[in-house]
Image 1: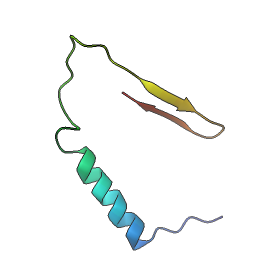
Image 2: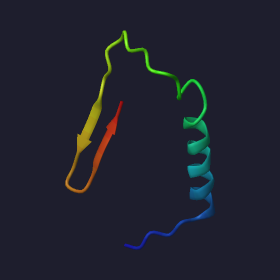
Image 3: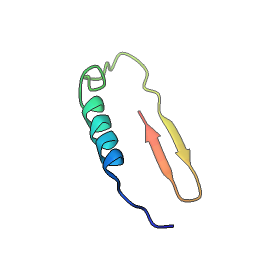
Length: 50
């Protein structure tokens, strides 16, 4: 199956990039609190969120 990048997908990707680069998503960490790491590993995928 070939991947085809459509205009709608590009617009959505740009909107997501904009959203995650703005406050409150990007804040300085509070080192007095615990950090939680969510991780996933599949047959062909590895992902993590801090």
